[in-house]
Length: 208
Image (cartoon, rainbow, N blue to C red):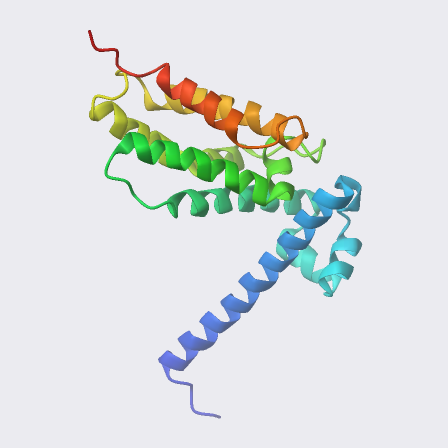
């Protein structure tokens, strides 16, 4: 019998295995997202994804279980990427400035990863319905808006109300502008900035 490896080495090996798994999973999701964006939902077959990613089909079944499992993984990955993008926005001393910066980061995230965005918000896979768990996790990924809006209320910028009410109104305005921009009807960010600023302004405290 061989001598057991030191726990430190075992831990390093386990981390290496996990890193490899995560890298492959990310690669598969990116391949699927790219196919969804370029060729539509019909392209999301296990065989096509495996071919594009140069891996066995069994790997996809092992990781995601089914095409529906893959769609839900894409949905959650998209929101996780949004979360990371939003949390990467540098803090501002003024919460209202920070809220504006988050809105612009939201637009950038949507336009930079159209495959994920289309699945998250445009029913790019018509038959896919996220589970309640997935919906809860997805909404939680955008909770940074609720927190910053709460800071704006505490600072006296916005009228006292539920932060979610403001966040949902801002979300609706942003989605409307993004849908038009993605469809080619808007050529730049000016309308997005106008409608999101107007939405925030509708909740501003009016002095005098």
